[in-house]
Length: 412
Image (cartoon, rainbow, N blue to C red; front, side):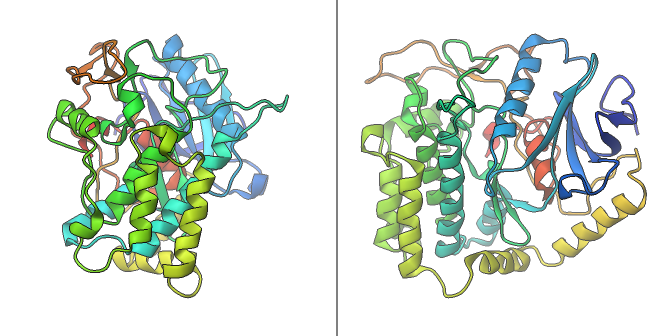
């Protein structure tokens, strides 16, 4: 099988021995990697995201890659994918991340949608609470001088929320994150991310703050507890119009069975179109979700309950993934492609997605403009068939979310 990189990859990148290729796309390739000292940072294996060597000379791509590495290196939280290392040479640059087994929340949503059954309400609230806590950590991150770095994820959605087989919840993919000191900045009128989770201020091109992430998390919670899409329509323009109209149905009117009013109030607050009326912080949203779970959550450990439910949703998959990973280790990290044994499912791609370009417009009372790719030559089309990877190592999914071949961020 031919490599996704046009030039041979060295057997080692920095301290990491490069092993099997487990995915790739237009911007980067992901490999299994191992530190020669297997006890380094307590990790035997890592996911190595390697930028394509024909793009490393492109200042914009390189800056985005470097920005992601710098942001990840500062974010140390159990709810955020763990950054292990970063390095570069004249022809290669890589980010090393932890490897964990599990599924994205989008995988779970799609499975629930196919079954016509939403995710259990308390489990959806638990997942959202964990992500809200992770976001608050990112939003309040300070630099070495004690100054706020102003991190905004800008792409919170079910594809970037990962649930491990043991019930841990991880926020992944900071490739589009905004932070003070970024080398790469979006041009005027360019909005990046998945349109279906845009906050109103992203469409009006207002200055963003951490409440943009709160809005996207509210939309995610609405979707996972209803097994329906909130704003997503047939086209980007229709989706933008839906966000502008802000028609958010009360889940109690569309979900069969019990749906607590207290959860609807939390969602409503997160989804306020005027951000001054939203939760002021992700921590405030997490606090309300914690209170909700105290009254309406099941007895016992919620992480264990989540792990049990995921196993029921994807029976036997954890064991298959574990066997695959053991085989990769025992075979001394073969350089051949080793795709994991799991059903295929759509994995969105960020770095290949053409940014949405919006012309200047007034802050209110506007008509949504036509959404067009910024540059077909520099960026692939926004809609394209994708390499589907249904299981994923969280670190691998993090990189695949930014680079899986032809995957479309706007198809979800």
